[in-house]
Length: 378
Image (cartoon, rainbow, N blue to C red):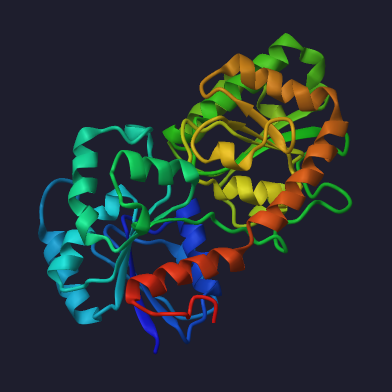
């Protein structure tokens, strides 16, 4: 019997959570699971990356504010779709659990993929009140990191039997180390520090930009080799470009905006950098590791579970420009470390973070919520 799962998100757009959903839809067997996505606001062309089966999308165009019209529309849609299971993701979609209960749906899953800048550490009492109120309605929780799993257990008081920690998976065939010449942007002797992601406040790309500028000012001779690449779009992009222009260093940086060729972009980099204020489990870090890149990341959230300091990358204090400068110098001074840490990164990505393992773990949670027995690995 094919189970119909309705996935409810605030918005389906370019992002790590959505990328994980695409990987899931492309891997779970369609004869066992059928999927529909409901975006409370809207969805984008990112959905076209789903290739293995048909997935229908619905947008409710929820306006800002406290109007409940969206809840009525969702209730009617759920009554029409008749899902076997509803899977909500993150705080912005959690209210849909109440609507699902009102629509008579008893098998439910809620996933926590990370927190945004307005509540970096999950301590906002209003949000946590909502999370605790929804707790009896959720059959099973999925946390993408041990950090989020611990928070759900200790702060939201989710019973251990409802908790499931599942790491995101990465396509280690698509994302692989560079073979041969660098694809673009910099000459062969350059050391390219780069990042990929939404250029929003929680990612703190201005910190990386200021660190790069400070490095060039302190040691201008480094300008011969050091390059900066940040791929992505968002409100911080213009601010970072203005910082570089003001410092007279725009010629050493490449900010192409959003791109679809991320695997190729990764192969143009030498060191991946993620300066976030907080993270769940970063898909771009996983993609960088699979691409054989050492990773400089802030010591927050799930980053500590992916980056082992001095082994496959470096961990730095969030918001600390001086520490970020020293991390950039660490690799700029001794390129042999790039190769050493990059080889370890690739090996760990292949061994620990496969997409089939992720999909099998999700299937086990869905089957548990649906009351299926002994089918998680079939």
